[in-house]
Image (cartoon, rainbow over all chains, first blue to last red; front, top):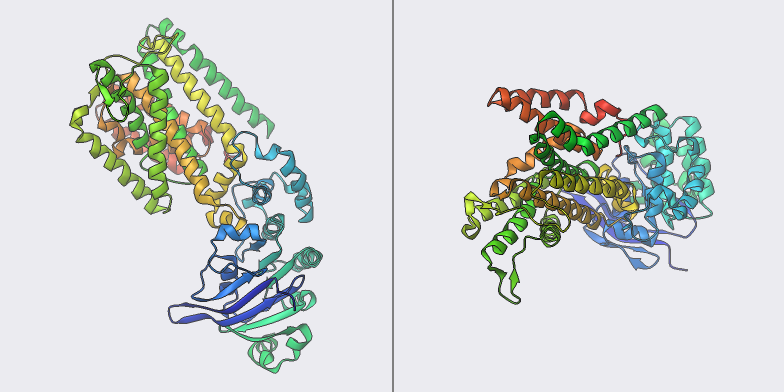
Length: 252
Length: 331
């Protein structure tokens, strides 16, 4: 089998006595939407942070397209094709929507040691800005300060910024969280369209969205992988039902 | 949105006109002293606007900005000192004499301030928040005590310049000529910095203010951008220092004392950070209030304090925000 896009080998991370990741090994293949689910505190975001470079693992290795990135600093990962959105929206609140997207576009246009010409007047960047605004449906809000957007719009912008980096692997941390049903549907559509262009690792709580979007699912409980498989395999896995879905069902 | 936009440019052109005509108005009013007061205001405005570049746009609160201001002043002072004494600054590896030529001394002041900013910045930008404030403060104080103990150049007493620098075609010892040089320096800086903050480089700096982590995950090596911004701000403060040395014809370690950094910081906050023009307003308001209040009382700080508290409490974007609203903030 070909080298997977992302290969994680026996990754461990603990915070004091809490083992947030215990010996996690995982492959994510080109072109799939891989969902990561698990109850609160299962270590999903911790795992994502280690892939993105926000956290350094205690042991284990991470490879992106065969190249080891375990200890690569945060800003060196983006050029290799890694982009993420955050669970807590982290757009730049005091910059306008277009400036937010512009920064993301600028990031993969070489260095930014350009001091004279206005960033918003650069034809090369503008050529990408229009489509980027359109993709996330914020064309009419271009000049608005990002901090004044609604929660759903911020999420859209956040995803738009991750997309503008043209990543090979997109890490989405709970993109649906706090969105109304309409927004969830819209964002699901957007993610499904992205599938042709990139591989997606999705952390999400919205089961309906996951079952409709994901190709494969990995279930994480207390920092350990309980199961990895297709949607049907996960649905029928007794360990998963007991550990996660069962509780969900009862809760519902 | 447009009326407000126009209002800003209207006010800007009015104040520019006022500043250009000021020497004539001062002569008409029979108060030639105003010219040197306003030279001082323009020089501090330059220092404050340069701090705004890192504070307002970069989100880096530095309490050591006077270090660059002071080193720029000392560069001019020391060169003039050697020129007057007809001694050499260095005898090895090359004999470098002093100079009282502004075309030599001022670029040297800018360069020395930039190099100092590169060194201080390289170390202090590895920290952030409160630590950054403290480490910039510590560096500035180190420099202050270094110059206090530098007996060769007057130590605690400072250095008196024999005369102002010379600039071909102009007579800097004439207050009006000197005033226009200060005005031109400030305008040039405001124009260049205004372009800078809107450029791609400026976008990165403003992004770092909002969230450095996010900038890194977008793929920006933020450290080198912030460092260059710090160096640019330091260099401009060095030019302000060179000007102040010429204005008062005297340099002393007091120029780089931390209270001087605090005064520049207060000017930025008073005027409105992240606006470039705000700190100019802040410098003018600060020095004019000082001037007026000290006519009535020696304890002018007692009355100045409440004014400052009111502005900071009720006008988040300082005087600039009061005048033009916060909407058209540059940042």
